Image (tube, rainbow, N blue to C red; front, top):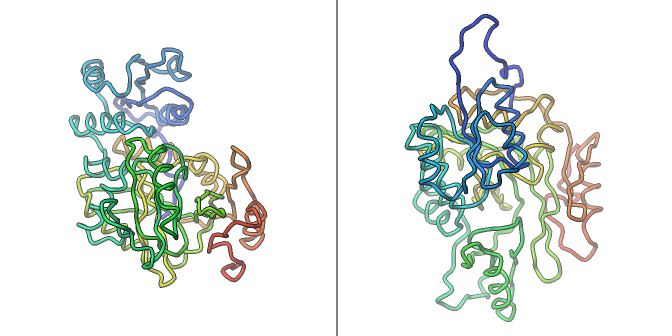
Length: 376
């Protein structure tokens, strides 16, 4: 189900509307789109940031210069605010926990504690998947020898700090220790997550969890390639997804996920690997609308009138997020140095050809970009 911009309308002229307030964790550049969206919705907004010169500080109706990790100080500073929603477009685990804890204490839409933990720790996510009956790659213990004759493994940071940094497919014992050291150095908690490698194609979903139900808003393919040492690199992402016409395994997994976190009402980006048998394996969860230009570049380019940040504000302030489907235009974001290039194409074949051209010749291509998989 995709976003319908016709639903993003304010109150009817002459209709009375009580003042509504939104608390935004952070006042930096990542929060500016949320601030602008709250203004378009007619919401008053309160911002928190430890930097008194943050770009959003002067735009706020009220600004508190507080560290996002200082939960007690935030609670005290906002005690007299009548809040209708709290939005945290941040990645810091402690700050995220504070935002969702405060929202729960106010009875506002938010993620439950278990979802916050699963979104920040691969180990916690694996435990939830096991309990909920969701497929996820089998986790392996570092306390026992890894049986590489049973297949390759993925070594990654337990708490990711930066994109695909520190993630590596390992096929031989000789490379395992070095991969663990690299992953630990790039993990926020210095821990390493090791799981079995699943062959397949990656896809991500923007969905809303709402009291045990899931609504799918958008679906896109994620393309990752492996270099000669097995390090995983994010090449790009694009739409329409190859799985748009057959999303049943993805929707079934989302339904299980929603039931596992039935106390949550929030937007999430969920990443799956679809194996050659068409089964969906849950890889990771991110709270919110996604990063790396997906929310502010890819989705608006693929869908006319799309606004991820108004969708986020509506969700976290308790407004309706009912949506309708529209077809996606062929669009992609492709890694170019340290930035992302937006690619516009007439059809999927041309789109994939452009993305393949960005991959070094001696790297292993993503399965979803192989010519035999293409459809116009």
